[in-house]
Image (cartoon, rainbow, N blue to C red; front, side, top):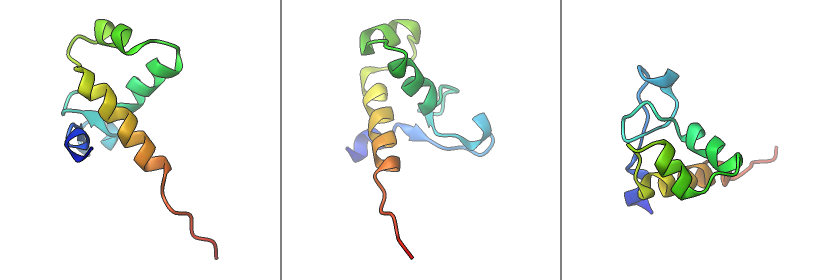
Length: 74
């Protein structure tokens, strides 16, 4: 899984510091939006030929990790 997360880059000078795929201007949120719109992985790869299948997996793993954080109750 950590190999996949290495595909996610964050650069404050690119896309407002939002997480992107391999330094490209394709944000993790762009990939997630396409999945949410009902596109399959194959369709996303057709729409965005610079992406690889592992990039899509990396976006999902990244989102999952960001959502699955401990919540501290005061």
